[in-house]
Image (cartoon, rainbow over all chains, first blue to last red; front, side, top):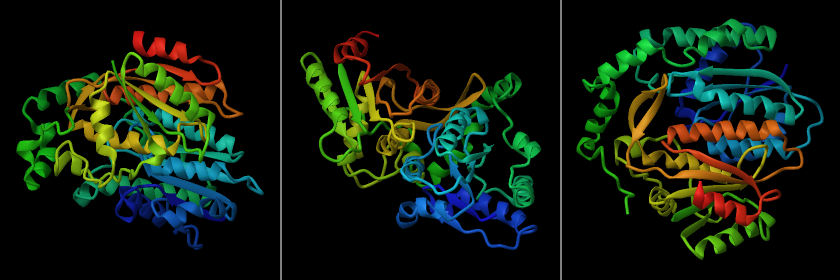
Length: 220
Length: 183
């Protein structure tokens, strides 16, 4: 199996997608000694070469963040490049979609699109891993990310052995689909205290922009 | 009405799609204020998720390009038309590029609605929108269903609604004008 990974984050190597890829590959390396190249769609040259890279591979994974409940524009450009090429053999194609919002419902329409795109390319669909609540992992203490990174290492280990996403992990990772009524009630209660805005407010204050937080600069 | 048309056609040179949009704009301008943006011809960068618009320069995108005129037009409109030939079964990357950038029109604070997280409004009013598309040879009903689902979610996130999805092969300009102004 010649596996390649495309990282579709516009944040490039400093992305959360890069961190999740690193842990996926850490698990993968336990069962496969062959190095797995990682290409960056945000890199113009690598994006332009994408169709040839896919042509030369057997199996392709694409990992990217959710933008407006869809793929980022730069990943859409990548898909257009892939769709414009005729491939000499069928490939296996899978996706990992990560988002800031914790609920997987935001990614469900996109998941349908990714499966259809794969069939349109006449490739074999390996599925889509959906993981929400990823924004902020770079500032979280290790205790808060240990489980997530462990899950991605297991995902990579299983993939190295079976060329498939482990179904139980896929199910676990996409929870919650939506928040429960109880959670929503607690969240709404806490939002009245302002605590749910803590992350945003601390960054606004750090940047000296807190007083301007409700600005409407594009109002005519 | 104030109407913004975001044309994501990426064709080089003459195109049936852009001709259709131009005709639509001409006829709409007879009775309405209309701004048309040919996205592919503009200097526009991809959103890089820097979040400056949320926590450094609230509401303002720092990318040094021509997006500000689009932001002003969209938020000042009564209706927005997202227009694009389908490419790889979705609207073009050019149109998606500017759609991603509209995030600066929202506030970072989050509220829950039907068990889902959504960003709060930054502005009082967000215009409803319509889709005008051109099919690919292999476009099928499932493609359209997926596309509508994704754009309906865009509406949920942007506190507005998709009012229609129309196709230049199937729908007359008169019909689209009627729906744009009367739905």
